[in-house]
Image (tube, rainbow, N blue to C red):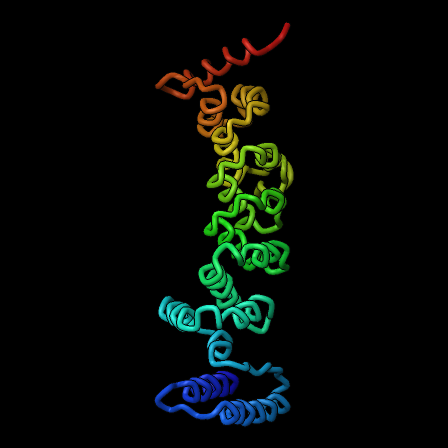
Length: 276
């Protein structure tokens, strides 16, 4: 029943908005009002609460569509309105009454329409309780080339969601934010980045990416700890990443060949750096 009524609302509002079927604004409001009354009656019987949309675009964002075709339709209808769509987009982003996927699209479309002017507003969603909105915030800030939100990227490296932590890492990588290298290195000590029971924890893939990024950012303070890790069999699962990072940090390449040869090379480097 809920889907039928929502469909009725969307088609009714859309009909009222077509140029060839133009009707005065007060009549459009009457259409929405009539459907609202029907929905309210249904809500009383079913116990459901449905907030009524005020525009055709808002009604479309309320719909729980699936697939690329529906996402394309949302984007197309939003772009038709250009800046007039902004109030609806911000409302969708802020309200849990809309499907998560549609809120994601609204965030993306706001960035596309408003450009860098939208960044301060979108950055606020980095603290949103919904992980998908935090992720959307990071992705759009990356798309808008917003390097200045270093505090957000550093904080979200410790987010409770793995996918959000990974995206924060990606932002730092793309922007080459060398000042955040210590926060990236800190990820190696974050228990959230390990899987398994205590005593049998294994490093997840995000640890491998973090080690490589430490190298890309040329974080020299991590050189000695990584040399020690390269000597320790406990870290054999990340030897490849450590070899890569050490090559970047020290600007020296280990010899081609087996990992044993590479380890021997880095062990000599560790001895050189040790003060007796």
